[in-house]
Length: 418
Length: 220
Image (cartoon, rainbow over all chains, first blue to last red; front, side):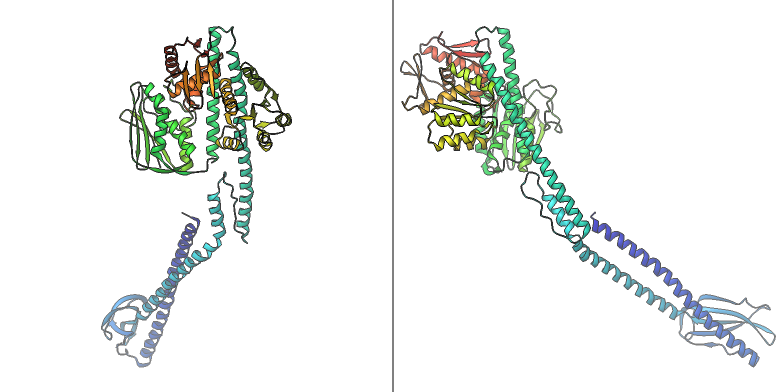
């Protein structure tokens, strides 16, 4: 829920509650005042009747008008207690039932006690209350409408600088060269926000540049000592007096240097893809590149007695050629390396998907783990630095592809959705 | 000339190349390199890009500005396509990323010198074996030797490093590049086939295994 809707909600709930409570209070107040008025009118009527009796010594004739009725009834010795009440009575003049206010009081005429009933119609009072309720409702609706409009137009315009800053931040790319262009604003809070954002992004960019340079430089610097070790080994093995045991040890050093060098190159590659240093993309016919790659791996595949099965449809993708090469190499060399003798590799290009699957002695892999750096399955005894799939993932991320893994029918399948 | 600021590396290179009867000079910083490159003519310059005092690429630019015909092999710690493209565009003959094997470096230097050589010799000889590096053909006593592409490359590599022990790692990298790892054992198949073909053509066995860690192509 965004800020504005939350604000609308609080605002509208508060408005409705306050207006409703006031209306209820208002209703009862008006009602009370109007009844009081009716009662006063009844008291006036009572006084008139009492005056008539005192002057004439007998009861006035019962009367019935549209809004007032006077009736008499003989009563017991004490007569009724004087009281006001609201009744639903039948008005003979209007020929209808209506809500009335009634005053009952006893009078003694010529020694006999009578109850006097004076009714006054409450109809007008009810009409008035209804009118008031209607006006109140209209006022509430109007108020809500106005609040809504204010929120919609004024608030939206007020928040515009904020939204613009937010958009800029969303588009902000550390490795991109473009700077933030923040909309100037007169609102203090937003100006503070913009200032803070500018300072922060500038700092982050600087830190990032430093880090980027450091990672690249470190990887480059490692290459030179490795070159020295390699060259010294190349000279050492020329010596005449080296025995077999020493040669074995030298071989181990060679292998270690090679591994270190490859790992270093992989890390450097990862850093460079992360830094989006492979920007040039071209439209590539995947089938052609795949065929080239497969021919490079031909020897490796046949030497391992692996059967290769391909099933492809034409598919054009947008990618960096160098990175696509690396991606295919990594997937294929994994499919060969972890295969069994007389195993199978299936390479498929479907619509928007490339999948490479292979038979293997390894159990199903954890698809949460395999794309992580330096992850290697505990049972594997093959060489590898655990970076191949991380590189695949990083390349996919760079081009918005989705890499994945499934274990199907005894085969490990790696797929990429373009 | 070897332009490289790491003394240990330049000395290794010089020691290996001297075994091939090359005369080597070493320049360890930008100023010396620029002075020597402009004052003398070399068959081949091995050029490191990051030097104290300047960039190796500027040495290359100066050479080209002087219309010098020295062959140039760039050795760089920055293994990137852009770097390679820049170097080659500026007129370098080849690009070899660090770390490398000396046998690889030596083979590339030999190739550059062969190409630069105006006597027109693109024929490489070893006893009765002749390699035509332009036509990529091998002959023994004038008879063509039927070799696969890999076997030809392997033979050329051996002859370029004759009399030297070449590690299996270096051979694997030369044959397959660094893209495919873990297949050092496949070298054996190629060596076996090459050995058989040379033998069938009437040669003695020149390829000697060195304690299973490398091979040496030599006469005796």
